[in-house]
Length: 347
Image (cartoon, rainbow, N blue to C red):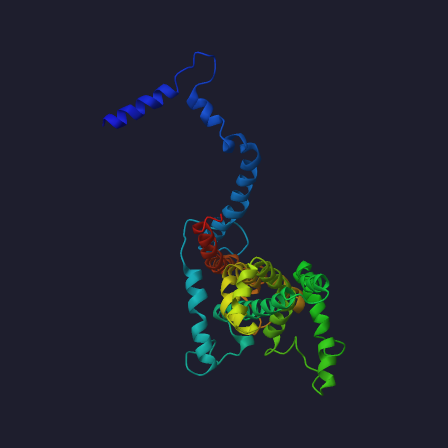
């Protein structure tokens, strides 16, 4: 108690008026803080981001709890999770009935074109498949390229620029470029396949190849980014580690596999977060390549499904539900990375 009284007394004396004409200590210490003096610079953008980004996320979540169709005003008086129940439950009967194991939709076994239930599980599966396959190959290819460049190949700067250049292109430009490359008549891919007596192959129209074609094009675009991240990490490893491995008699492959690559964990996580988030945002690419937001069930991801529900089907509430699912997926990817950076004191 005596300590508390002494503390309060000292605080009171700090705010007493000074005899030299200066400001009270408590008043001066508050307004002289850097955060307060710089408020005119950081407060307006902070409020704008809070309103138009985080505020929009919160509004979208509440919108997903309504039955808003895009016409009129949404009714927030009767909120429920019906859209989430539909998103995760209704595809089951449709999938089972396609194999004759469940109930029928509309009195007949449905095909993909006749399936009236919402195939969110299909879109979710395509999204995860694209995200995992694209990220794994992109990181592996980027690591191999980074090791080759790090070993001092000729024309290193030119090689590095060529591989990084596709990263500067937008999804729209990349999609149009690869749409030409996949062309069954004039595309480079089919010309090369024709040399080996294969083709022409309808890559973009083939349901079995659609998602792979998208992943291959995205790997071409982002492998250079992974290479640069890994190359920066390799250049940061002390040369003594390489020399120690050589002295121990380790071969080049063992040296990289057991000594160097384990030290690239931070670079791998950083590149993985960026690449997987871009995979979730591949709507622009699919829209440009397939001329709309209906790429077909084999290449339909959550992003295209979201836009189609909101604008084509006039079901904004259901589209908002899919947007929330996408947001949660992105949050599950980014949040652990941000937390680990914070724990290491790098934020």
